[in-house]
Length: 274
Ligand code: 13P
Ligand code: ZN
Image 1 (tube, rainbow, N blue to C red):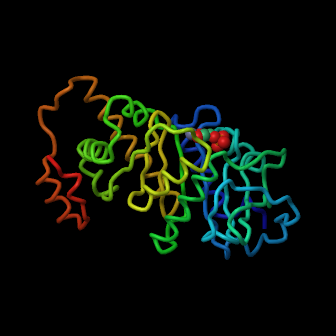
Image 2 (tube, rainbow, N blue to C red):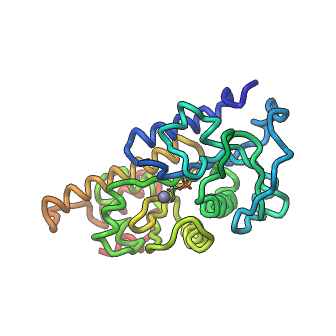
């Protein structure tokens, strides 16, 4: 059995390529991590290198101790993942304290996991807990239209959620809990990881002002689909705002309430403020 034949590895590579094809991954922009099911490694255990150095994560994730993750490499380009996965992605193991990791496969020409590893792992820790272990994918992309909106909309969860919900009837069904917004912060460290993971307790989507988006999902389809849906809504909003500052008509608060009933979702009242 080759690592590249594992279904989750194939799904991960496909998602990197899909994201690149959407235009969300200029240069090395964006990163993807997957919390591996231990049983999925059973046929490839002897291909994992357990002698490597233990490196600092840069934050603490004790609830992820002894878990394996598939991650994109720092400075690696999403467009190259499909051509040469073994040079651009890696399997890492978290140590028993949740403060260090070891590279066990991949990054064969050297390198490290994504610089956003603290944010990814803190988001995984939160999502593992609040989803009862179901969420396994954390995805960060430089989504053009969503980024554009962070220059013109107030950086408030209520405003981003409501404006994007209004752009497509399916939006509140796809992301009923809403969207959190992180103000501009220096990326790549613990502070932005703490801010993002706090939002992930409540939301599956967090927007980083003037930078991009993070989403969490149970699997690759759901995480990619969520990113795609939010970014599509943002594209529609950019078009609307480019035509006129005032919408002539839109979906009303009571219409969202009707939708919530029929589609069996709970829409927090804080987003139905007008
Ligand atoms: P990495 O290449 O380290 O993953 O960084 C890309 C990025 O998008 C940082 O936010
Ligand atoms: Zn980024």
